[in-house]
Length: 183
Image 1 (cartoon, rainbow, N blue to C red):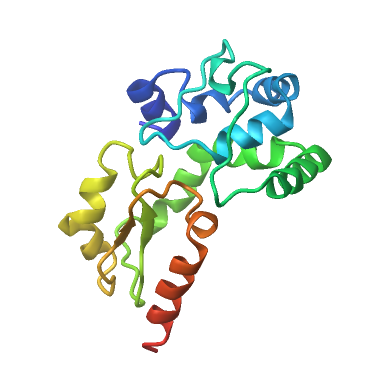
Image 2: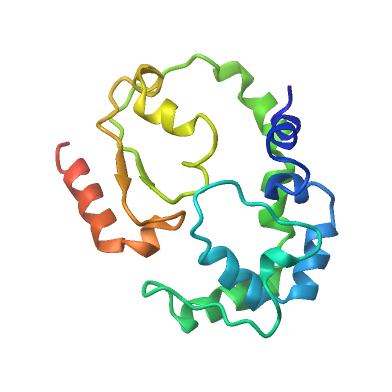
């Protein structure tokens, strides 16, 4: 089964990857909702679990609703991201998700290959990918270590979501420095 079909079967048509498939649809929705609201909602999303974006636009909240920023994200940060996305649009980043099926095909020759270099894996406990079905079991079970034999113990950062390098920059930097200093 193709990855997008599998996601649709598991999470439904409103799963974000599925919503991103039709060229122009999510771009038009983002344009209607507003880039600033979209950026704030995506950057502050903290619910572990699938990202469901219903077509009724309820995911984005009402226009008058304030989206509070966490301590690691400033209005200046948001303004910077907004300026870049308003300049270039969302099609480029969304096209990554539109390419899931093709990327899966292109990776076919590497199925079963092992990553044979020392590796460190970090993830936030609230990361939407970490919360996907089977991901925690893979990361903490024997298969991840089989696929990446030189993998050090994975680090799951408490209270952190998808943007770990922004949410905990000093902690991430220290983990990276500790890791590379071994070599």
